[in-house]
Every structure is written in structure tokens, then in C-alpha cells.
Length: 113
Image (tube, rainbow, N blue to C red):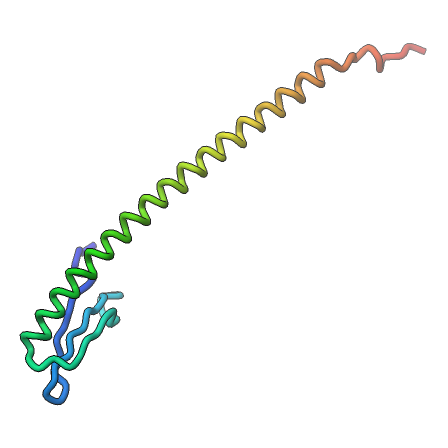
């Protein structure tokens, strides 16, 4: 699988003013505008804003991904602890059932006629 840029920016001229957009690549053909700013007097201003906005946006995404990864590992650890506790209780119940069955005196049920 090819590793390309997921986020990029583009600068567009509209009737003498410039618009800068941060776009996300959804698939090889589809893109979606994530952030837009218009009303720039020159292309250079629009490009400068787009570069700064993209840098800040990517930094924010990295922080969010790290935060979510930390939360995911905590959730998985909690699920493992709960599964281990449930397995321990299940084993204790099985052992208690075995002890209860061993305590039953089978001679009580063998009446000779």
C-alpha cells in the first residue's frame, strides 16, 4: 500500500481574492475540505496561512492520536483484568461444586430391598 499524504493544502483564486483550504484525502479520488479561510489579498498570504494552519492541525491530530492510544491501552488492560477476575470466580465456583459433590454420600441412595 502506498504511503501518501493524508492532509495537504491548496490555494485557490476567486474573483481577485485568494482562498486557502486544508484538505483530507479520503480515497484516491475523493478529498474533503477540513478547514477553509478566504479573503487573502495575495497568494503568498494564503499559502503562508495554509502552511501554518496545516502544521498546527497535524500537531493537534498527533496529540489526539496519542491520547486515544493511551485510552485504548488502558481500556484493554481493564478488560484483561476483568476477564482474569471472572475466570478466577468461575474456577472457584467449579471447585466448590466439585467439593459439594464429593461431600454427598452415595450410600444414602443405595437402599437394599
